[in-house]
Image 1 (spheres, rainbow, N blue to C red):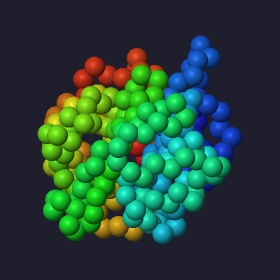
Image 2: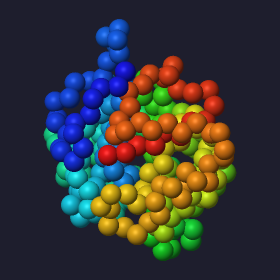
Image 3: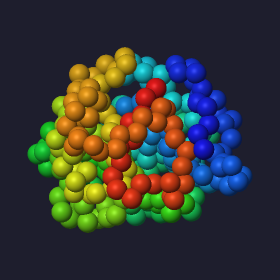
Length: 239
């Protein structure tokens, strides 16, 4: 299903065709643009927590989404201006319906002090083509039982692991254990030229249980709902 990504370090072209399988059917593509910035593409393209690249030491995303989700107004998560076209921007907790996609924003905090230190954070949950995604933004604490109940059943969970500004490796694992996704995707960790002094991915992967499935997927992966594992698997992205 995978289609060859552009050469690392070069901008992504905007005219990449929608992902299809060998039967010519539309599938979904999950792509990482570094840090906490992901996009999900199918019938609709959703971009999550865009950064501008330059200010944080990475290559800027180059994409034309239909919807942009912003977890909080810090510069490494709210660079909506990099998105081409005229996407709908969602920046608040609550229920939203955009381009045929129902989106739930769950209010959480950017710290363990009820937002007193870094403010609020919105975790977004949405379903596309039978797959339920959750992007936790800059989650600063393990979700409460009430927040986990709001988030509900999740197929693919994107969760920060780098600590300092977010949950660390242990907090991420506790979050994963509480939400119990089929696929967990670590994000917001030190790599490449990233200017933040957060922990590297290895701090997280070294704490994973022995024998757990870890899949290195490159910068993007194409999949269908039926491809998802029955028991938890970790997808590790790279640029």
